[in-house]
Amino acid sequence: MSEERWLITGALGCIGCWCCRQLVREGHPVVGFDLSDDRHRAELVMTPEEVSEVNYLHGDITELAAVERELERNGITHVIHLAAMLVPLAAADPPRGALVNVVGTVNMFEAVKRRGLAGLAYASSAAVYDRSDGTRVAEDADGHPINHYGVHKQANEGAARVYWRDDRVASVGLRPHVVYGPGRDHGMTAGPTLAMAAAAGGERYEIPFGGRAQFQYAADAARLFIEAARAPGEGAAVQNLGGPSEHVTDVIAAIEEVVPEAAGTITFAKDALLPLPEEMDAVNPVTTPLRDGVRETIEVLRAARA
Image (cartoon, rainbow, N blue to C red; front, side, top):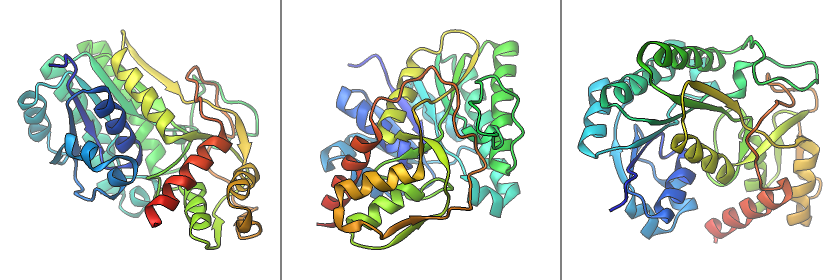
């Protein structure tokens, strides 16, 4: 029997599904803890057999007792905490957003502390910063987030530091930038993937922002979360996810390379910029080149439409 037993919160979200896929393929028991029961993303990135290997549990991270119960019941050794209300949802309902994003994360730290677990990785975000002046943002730069979601993520990084100082709960927080790939169908930065889906279906689409960003393939992001949970070390580390800074026009060019008939049908909002830095210092490599990730994404989305 495997020595590793994993619990993934937000397991039916994009990165969560890719985490489940990698861990199942490695042969590890996986518990998927999610408030949703909608498996369409899981079914997009995994085979039916792989989906059936995940023990999906309907659960709410705002309920500490439920989290503790499942950690104990399933003999969990490693936790990846991804569950959250993303930027639009947190903006629409700030009290609920804070409950899920902040209290829910504190509950995960508290449950890990009580169980004495060593492997905890959690999702922070590039949203902890504000928009930069175009210069590369240092990993330890002070952030001044301009939306509720970014403030929530900043609070969670602070909670992680306190849990290490007071209780020696080690953790690694990772800050993704613009994640794309199969399953990335909602959130402030989902536009590039929605554009790929539109091209795969012969439809028009306008990406709702322009400018530059670090585009990170979902499979790479999942791999880095898994690596982080396996090697928390000591302290409350927080790391940016890296990758080359590319313009939205590079995404469109990559789409048109795969779907030549989409030329002119995918546009972007030239005057709308993300409230994020264009580029962040990072030690974590994202290994899939943009063109390869776009091609793989469109191939998966085309197959799903067939």
